[in-house]
Length: 469
Image 1 (tube, rainbow, N blue to C red):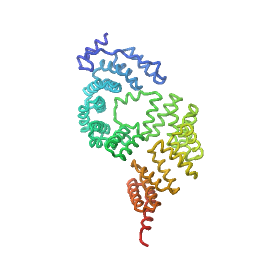
Image 2 (image 1 turned 135 degrees about the vertical axis):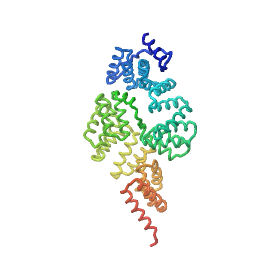
Image 3 (image 1 turned 45 degrees about the vertical axis):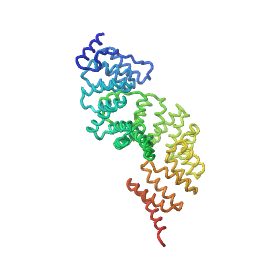
Image 4 (image 1 turned 180 degrees about the vertical axis):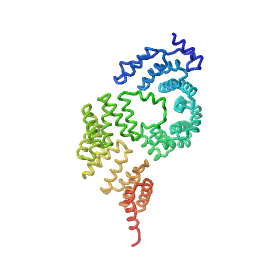
């Protein structure tokens, strides 16, 4: 009762978040339902808050620990109490707004973020979350006005352009939607959500090639998100300590190409929970990429002990062995396919072993199966085309190679060159020259000097054959 009266007095004096609202009780989190790694820090923070329930910092720290472990329902009242006891500290209203946003309490979240900005004017993360809240609440006019103001002050922030693109797409304004979403993807190339939103707009416009290119980039960077410096949120992120949290951070770092840091997070995950099989599986791949095969082998053995029937364990081990022990790699891929017959990547890699062993028909069969499972699998389509060229099935080979030209990336010059070579074999010199010249332009732009040597040689041969004798 004393706390509730105090809260009402503070709210009336300061214009706080919840005038005429009773102060919520200190929540009692269900400690018995948490894994041991997160139960301890939550229990300790809860004990401290119970010892002094009117202390803003203790309420706030409990909320931070709960938020760090995604217990937003229990974190929100802690932040509400912390703000009531220390209404001049903007962090508590900011954390409260974020928790309310996760809980889809949009009106409350918007009020909380506005309170934060009253206390911390110009704090960009709070402005961004307010704009997101308004958009998620379908208050598009308000969201648009705020995003436009933010763009004026921060024109090179990817998430702002993403928000503007979403609003224009929802309103059917496809031109501005493409402009802003493309800019978001340009500023943050690994922004998975941005690529997905842009692919949807392109699909609606009937631009299939552009849609396919950005959908492929979304598939590659599903977890990618623009980095926005947020010191307040960083204080919460530092409190995360579950195996799942480390695994999630490790996957995000791997998506960003930070392999050493990704491996460290995965190691932290298995240190907390030795049975975290996905962390072991990912470490096989990560240590293979980092050139540490013995450590990859250790995690392969650990994963086998936990679940020997997980196809990804054998697939990642096959990738690890590919350079040093092709036969062993092939056996690992074969085992992965026994466990998961629809495993497109395993079909592709096993087919490569068969192809280099001269078993072209068997290899083609596996490439075709890979494409049935993943029609956008360019590597499988390219290798199938190579086999078809060797077997003299040039029309089908050309059809497959034409489908490898998007999305535009570092492989496109090589695939374009292969298409030109296939046309040359078919006797269509005009198309051969056209695609080889296109391959030369793309390879030059990317500085692919070794490929350029081959392209120039073949172009000279074609031109010489066409010259009068």
